[in-house]
Image 1 (cartoon, rainbow, N blue to C red):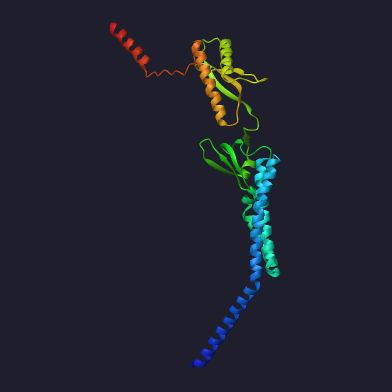
Image 2: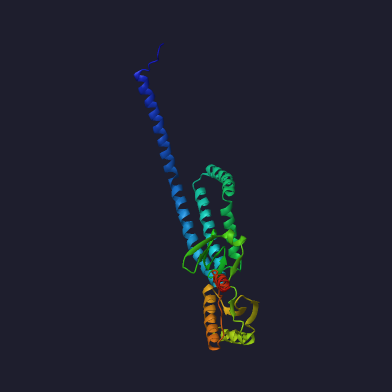
Length: 309
């Protein structure tokens, strides 16, 4: 078998040709870069100017919406969306300044296909985004409101395109996805400053029920005054195992969970003090444990009787 052995001259010539082609290619790239360098610089300047303009104009829009007494949630989300749109617009204008019309058309076409795939993959995220816009225009939730939802409660300190952030009683932050807020019931304690607190208790069977009702209502009225057209409601509920149980409902000023706790705290102390002054008993369940003592005593008596016989 005969092997072809290239000549040394041929190897040198081929290497030289390859190096020349590579050098020519690099020279062309450098020439193109130098030729488009002003466009690159212009594109960067345009993009930076759009970012600067977006930040400055967003501050102005924020001030205008604040003076117009717009809802805080709408104001925050509207400003953020505006900034995103302006930055994206600046990006595409910067691309057009590069004079890359063919490349730009390809990028836009590819972006459309990729956008469909990304949209299918990020359905949850997009759902949160649209839910965030919906929450922002809802008059039911605003910044600073105290809400209960998804087993959490706290002040709303932020509403964005992804989640709602609550600051709880223990001063921790909880981020709840926007779609969870819309899909589940929530309670806003800040929409109405007046709400009803409920207390349950019981009194002994020997008590005068009319008198108990009277002094209970008066005790609550003294520490939690009721406003006009508000009434303390008292209802006996049942005959319990050791007490006659009742439920009392009264109006309180409630802007957060602490307000309800304070109102109940004052009411319980006032009721207990009134009952002590009027010898009203609040019984507690009593259980008698029988370990067979009575049975043993009966058997002992029977044996003594047999011995006498």
